[in-house]
Image (cartoon, rainbow, N blue to C red; front, side, top):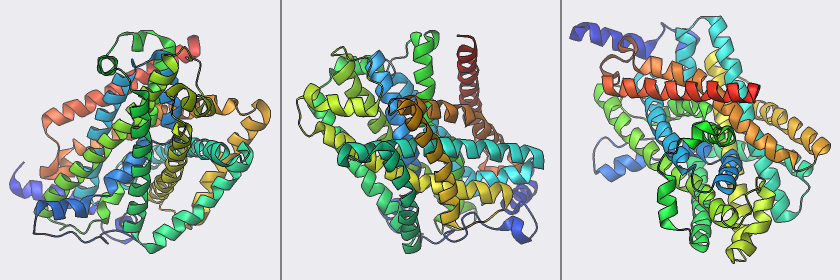
Length: 452
């Protein structure tokens, strides 16, 4: 391809269409609203880009992660730490690709799919993604309701209904500006990390056992029970709707819309998301490590529910405040996840369908669809049924992953769409390998679920 042809390909990629509604920017109310210094020290430029990475990292430590990490640590000790590490590395790669797509093309992943695939395929992808968002919201409802019950004694059904009020919190933050939204998210992330740092110090887990846990074991694939939890961890860690979200919110930065500006933006956005996801790795590993040290080691391998963990943590760790810190971190996690799920829902609906509805209506609809099964399961099976529902929601998320990962990898490895910003052959091969691993694990899980 000649330089002139390459420039033309880039121009096609960045425009995607001629005019009208089809070139409407992603999240137009905040697109390119955050100033980026084009000179000065590297720290000033990094600080200008810090934010989107932490917002997407929220999805990697939401209440769904707690259920799978607690179950994994209690049942299998430190063995599944390797799954957390590998899934986090996958997440770092995929989120970097997502940011690259948004910065280079000026389109979020949903818009790119709409422009590339025929309408029936787009409708199918939209439906699958909506299921993933509802599954994620389901985990948030359960986690927040449980936290409210543990901290304030509110019945689980009442707590689930209260979670609908988070719509107004999001509207308040959005009205103040996108930076306020990011600051709120980062503040709660600091709360979560601090709570678990204290609990790990109290648990004093053996370093050698933790290091062994990061070494892959073949039992993870051969043991159906362990594979089920491992798939739940992957589903809770690599979030499909986060790929849509990240490709959109990186465009909130007012970087120069030329080759130099895009290249600079890719570098800082990738660094932002990588640092943020390392924090997510710490939190997820901390949950599993605390569960392994407190429950597996003491013979409480049957602990699979959050309220069980809450009751046992303080006496087993010998720290009176441990259970309260656990519940506070859970509440912060649930509140944080609200922000990202709502934005992702807006991006997906507008990107695939070009349909705009008021944020509060969109949020109440999604949250209502998540509250209904929680209330139903709690009423029929009691509070213990929510633990299985929480793990199941993460497995559902994992099953949706290929429908987001494959289009993303297809776009960023396509020179006609990305021009000179197409990923290298090595990154392309690694990206397709990650997609293949996710597909293989999904098929294995389906087979075991159906025939076991």
